[in-house]
Length: 244
Image 1 (tube, one colour):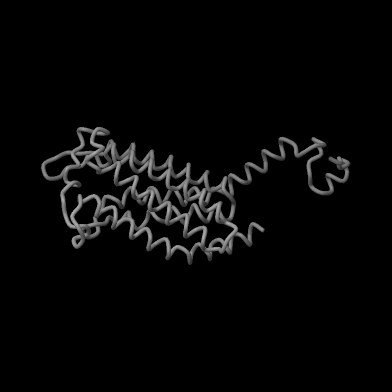
Image 2: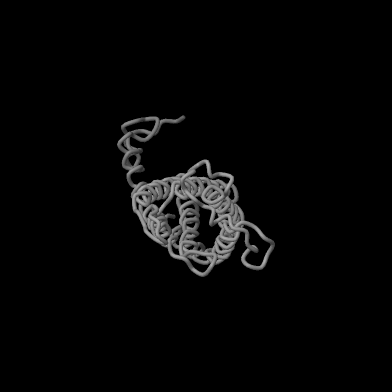
């Protein structure tokens, strides 16, 4: 490699402390700047996770909770960070959201609610475990798929990654949280109510109640994945221009 004289390096704005590369101080400053850049995405992900953990406690009709409409925004946040700042930024945001989710779950396990003559935690172990595993698996899968497809048509990467991630998230969460085959995870937690046999969404073939809950949740995620393409395009166009 041809070494650049110190004088020329300074003119180009490159630290002259190391003839073969940038100095440690330069790298540290660059890393700090990148971390500050990620803060909006991290805060957005944290807000989505906190809101979803709260709203999931409030029912909407027979098959949904309000959290079903806020949680899918997490995929939008991840995809925007991936498009604008790259895979590393997206993964940092995912891990930040995971940590916030774990904290919310730990708090929820200590909050006791009362109803129908029973006292129970706001968040059970199975729900906390299912939520954490589903979030981390689905979001990292979303990041990987998006990165693989990022060079194609602008809508292909966010749509494909979100559809696959959402499907995996729903399958993992509802299976861990409510399937009767996994009662050994938390024997003291009675989830027999979720195993009641009913027609799927009230009209289909019979299956455990939690299957209807999962399908309803999945359909909302798929719908929002399509709707989210518009804000994804607008946000990434704006911020990609600013970064450039």
